[in-house]
Image (cartoon, rainbow, N blue to C red; front, top):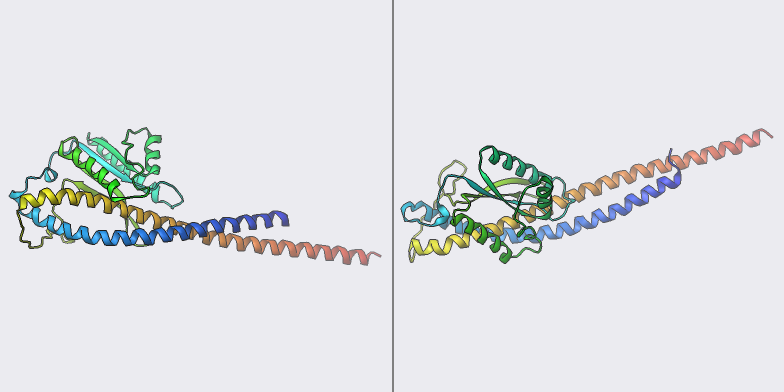
Amino acid sequence: MASLKEIKGRISSVRSTQKITAAMKMVSSAKLHHTQAQTEHTLRYAEELKGILNGLLAAGDDINSPFVAQRETRTVAIVACAANSGLCGAYNSNVWKKLSELIQKYEKEKIAIRLFPVGKKIADNLKRAGYDYDKRFVGTTEKLTYQKATQLAAELMRLFASKEVDKVEFLYHHFKNTAVQVMTDQTYLPLTLQLDQEGKTVVEDFIYEPSVEQLQDLLFPKLLNLTVYTTLLDTLTAEHAARMMAMQIADDNANDLAQELTLQYNKSRQQVITNELLDIVGGQANR
């Protein structure tokens, strides 16, 4: 049985750790509320643009943008988004698990892969596994700005327009609520019509001025830039939510452990007192 000093030391250690987890939870909560507000405002704007995009795509024959070209998939670019640090539960491991499945799937189909990790943790996983990847955008979500997002979007648009890749996918966590982050595999390029839950085309009736051609030249790059930015904001929000929940669980576990150790300490202390009393009573009885 552990001594009273050892148990007291463990209680002190657990309480110290609990202070750290509580502080990290508060920091993650503050960051979550900030990024969640940003994401909600940006998504409203993005949804309106997507409505206009659907109207343009529904025009069909009038669209000659390189970003809507459907080609046989011979090379695919995958942008995998994870965190720059740990202590966020299964957040990073889920991204790596899904990315590994995608890589194996495309390798079986003899499709070439170009990897663009966003986040140090997913880049570390790729490095350990021996995969080649583009290192330029690993730190994009560290102090994320719209300018950083457009740099990634510009490279992806360039690759697709020049036919160096035939498809671009984003792999990331979508923030559903504080407790749930949904692993999402989204096609970024080529652009396609948006469908509703019944699989029907969602098209709003617009009158276009000055012309469809001029609008598509302006709108498509703008929408693609915004899509990257909102996706990165979304994955950041999910990361903060996952870390906040992980720290909440750690805080609860530390509290439970501290209570168990305190109970054990009190029982051991009571046993020591009882033994001392028995020694005293026994000594007096022997006189």
